[in-house]
Amino acid sequence: MKKSNVKKSFGDNVRKRRQQLGITQEELADRAELHRTYVCDVERGARNVSLENIDKIASALEFGVAELFPHPEYGLGEGREPRKKNGGRDK
Image (cartoon, rainbow, N blue to C red; front, side, top):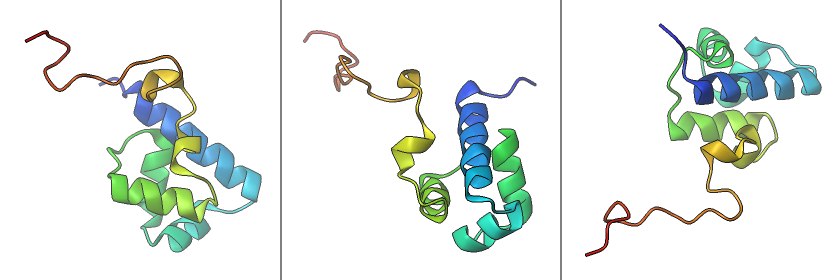
């Protein structure tokens, strides 16, 4: 089964930031109050990470949540309009 690009991208960014800080997966897990194997799975793109855990991981990495999602395709991005509640259909 193919991994979602957003999960893989998020995991890659978590790993890069963790390595920049010079900490182990175990230390990141301790800081974020998560299990080490969970952090390993996140870095591999094998987990659907909850918003709460994304926030814990970002805080543990001394990063803002948005910094872990640098790709415009995964966020609102400049020049993009938010989706309308009716799915973009006119009434």
